[in-house]
Amino acid sequence: MSDIQFPEDGSKAWREVLEILAEQGFEGLAEAMQILINEAMKLERSQTLGSRPYQRTARRQGYANGFKSKTVWTRIGALHLAVPKTRRMEI
Figure 1 (tube, rainbow, N blue to C red):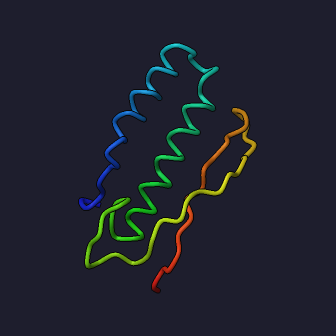
Figure 2: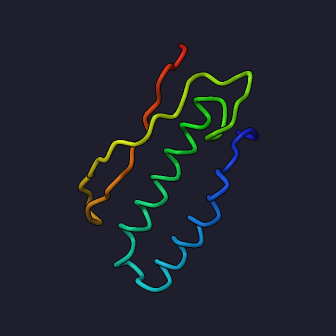
Figure 3: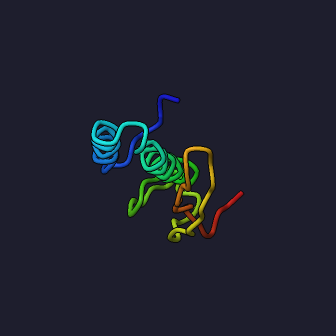
């Protein structure tokens, strides 16, 4: 897992999560989880594609193609997720 790289705005997401939890405590847990899961999915897409957004590399396997909204109901509340989409994935 040494090749895992966080998106440039990853530190912004961590700060946002910490602020939410500090201000709202357990009441903000659903929102914090939503942010973390969305960031994890963007990271996974970048790893699968072999490049970051807007980056051109020889090992690129496809292209990012926006997001699809999805609501997941959990015990901590509704998580409104932005599921990353891809196109031209070579398998």
